Image (tube, rainbow, N blue to C red; front, side):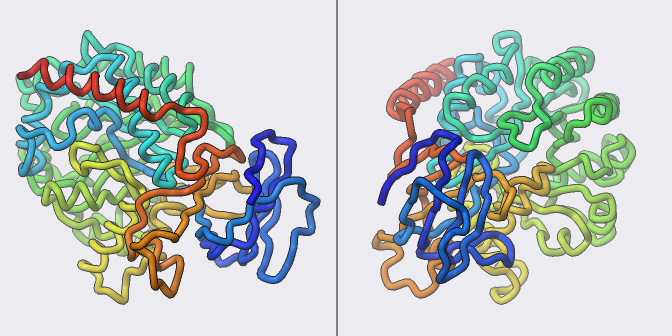
Amino acid sequence: MSSPADAHHNTLWIKNPLACWTGNALDASNGLVIQGHKIIELVPAGHTPHTAYDQTFDAANHVLLPGLINCHHHFYQTLTRALPAALNRELFPWLQALYPVWANLDDEAIYASTQLALAELLLSGCTTAADHHYVFSSIMPHAIDAQVAAAKTIGNRVTLTRGSMSLGQSKGGLPPDSVVESDATIVRESERLIRQYHNPAEDAFCQIALAPCSPFSVTQELMRETATLAQQHNVLLHTHLGETQDENQFCLDRFGMRPVDYLEDTGWLSNRVWLAHGIHFNDDEISRLGHACVGVCHCPSSNMLLASGICRTRDLTRAGAAVGLGVDGSASNDGSNMIQEVRQAMLLQKLHYGSANFTHEHALHLATSGSAALLHRPELGSLDIGKQADLALFNLNEPRFSGHGDPIGALVLCGAHKADYVMVGGEWKVKAGQLVNTDLAEIMHRHGVAARKLQKAVG
């Protein structure tokens, strides 16, 4: 096997994969050809490329997939995994235990946690990740700027959402006042970040979205202002919604309406919006979300850990909503592994819909084309001519896969946890299970120092 150079003028044939799942009905049984940052040919079984190529990669021991896409995360939460004070709690008490810790975050901690989370994701086959950062304070004024800089050092594509909290405890919200901001500050910073970092191009590595945190942490006025700003700049909107029954009750008690009515009231019932979790919706609400083409990100591990419930993914899809997959925050998962999240999605959805009605391929679709649709990135999420060359190769030469029949099924059912090779935009970012040109030991050291400092600050 020859490992290709990364120069964009090279043309690479990834040939003879053990199995290839394209995410569509197209045949790429004998691999695909990449030129620059795009896929230019799919090679059917028994054929060789029509295109001239100057590099090859023999994938005979590998399963080939589109790069996985993570639609909801909180990178900073890698600093508070398995924190004793937050263990074995449901969402509201879990948040109340962690807010005082997160109030001590600084820009250095954000940089370290972003690097670590993206490295962990990349090693699991994830080529694109959306992060929801919503904790800001006087000691952490430039968190998103730090994330942009950190992401460039790892190499994934990112959608970084400028989150916010403006409704503190003194005004009836859940978060402490120390981590809330004024609406004016949030809107001003949101606009600055869009102008400075958002790239709308199809090959973009960094996009910005706007993401007031949740109904229990922001005002209705901020939701409306953010929707207007997003429309003016043509960016996406993201928030948590329908995650728990406690949240539904909060909306009824404070606003006199259920969460989907709250969305409509604030101008958020549109195809610009994707929601995290989306569990506690009734049939009529699912119909309304689908009709508006609102997206929903399923977060199975987090939903199980916090006992929040099960997202009705197939009902949402049938209604017209785009449904993707997310690992959620590493303090409510407690990992950042997308291929493992695919398996979790399959298992949890089988529990709800029945074993025959949700397959490993359904789960893979959530993590690829479903997530691409959520993020409005049609150039990602499947292997096809003209798509961006984002892909992951998994080696099944491990004890966990021994004796398998179907390689694609084995990848999910037998519990793959690491990719062997990962490419983003035609460039290898992982080779032989190792990050390319990135010192993972140094990233982990820096991250560990930041985590200890953060946890020490609250005893």
